[in-house]
Image (cartoon, rainbow, N blue to C red):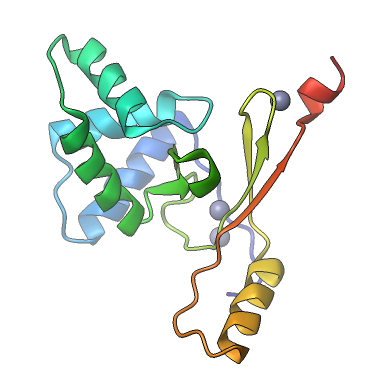
Length: 154
Ligand SMILES: [Zn+2]
Ligand SMILES: [Zn+2]
Ligand SMILES: [Zn+2]
């Protein structure tokens, strides 16, 4: 993918873009899926399936199993609505569900704040190197650990 200006969605606009994307995938935007997406998007840091199950349970006043949340998160990841932050073993809402990238995450070791950047030159280079080494369909996972600006200045 070449360089382009893509839109990062927030709030209602993010929810709308996510619904549109999932529907285009031929999947239904059910109440449960909407609730899971709401909870996921409400977290400021990567959230585990358990965190999200708890948030949905609290919001709905009934017990929601982490297993069913996990299945929905799986669907969200495959439909580009969410991304897995592997090194945090957690998920974030994808701010550009209508646009596919190998997202790069910068994760603060201190507070867990996660910054999302897209640099297709960087991830494209990793893809190319993997292909050269005989890897088919390489899927770069690029995560950088460090200290965020907020923690640095404290
Ligand atoms: Zn884009
Ligand atoms: Zn991205
Ligand atoms: Zn921090």
